[in-house]
Image (cartoon, rainbow, N blue to C red; front, side):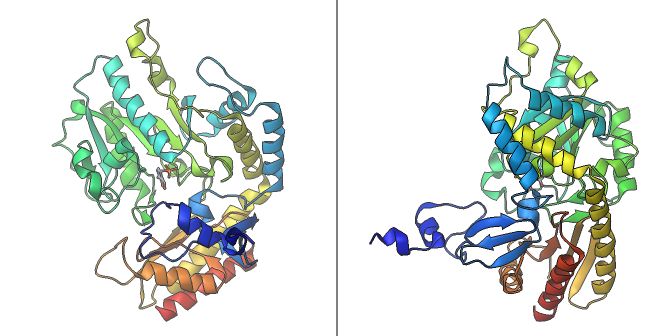
Length: 421
Ligand SMILES: Cc1ncc(COP(=O)(O)O)c(C=O)c1O
């Protein structure tokens, strides 16, 4: 008998796979997932876990959703892929037509790519070249927020907080002016005519530690920057598609972005796809006889038709009243649970916004490499809940199809973990 047959999937994995964000020397073996069923992940032994973090914040309608699966199948039988330079197709056009009017701002063009990092790269390159195309070459500086995270490619890392994730590459990242959220806005020292763009995660900074900050503060900053013709880029890769209780977090703000980056929830968590949408004003700066002013950017799988069909299906589900009601119920339950734990002696800074809830375990500082993460994950698994804290920041961000009972199971698990740690 072949030894392949007696090895578990996790064992076979360990001989051939290098996982993201994983120190293989010390990490526990991976959880081998055989299938997904709504809010549950099912491992190879048949154990079910509530996916309380929506598989890296992507899954909004539950796993293996039959409607999305059906639409993916239909599209795969019709047209699986085609080069998107010089060609177009119905799912890409329809998705843009449906999404543009829903976006928070005056957006008129959609640029497709594959993931959150590429959506950010596109936004940065678009902004830099926008000013260059308009012969404003002095505008070459970029503003970003402290504690931000925008992805793992070089441009995205450059505009992210320097720390554990970027340390090995710091010498290769371009300079960025960082502003601390919620601090008094004395920006007089900034030479506005040298700033090309400002990138921000509206209201919730995800991988930086689920840091939540004031809408009024951000609104004022965007207002000041827009007056000085600085392009404002909302990175809604995580906050988009209902996560914060509104369809987009920018809806909480009066001042809207010029560019918005979307991915994660876009296809309901089924296939990789990203969008960088911009205003007509930005697009117009690239409409030139001079061919050097073309936006030279694209990826092999740009606007993949199957992914676009999945995004259209996800949007159908998201716009159903039952889904909007679920987002509201999770929002209300999260607020109540925050009140329950806010004064717990082991808990710091319990907070929630929409379907996102987070708190810290007491520690000298917020720290991604804090060992409490591993212990929390293991305790949660014992309770059949899948969590993945950001160091000592524990958070939940469940799919919207989670029932009230399942959500209570997640809260109960959090309480057990708080008592145990
Ligand atoms: C706000 C934000 N921007 C960008 C990214 C990068 O997305 P991806 O992991 O798909 O490259 C993430 C990922 O967590 C994110 O949270």
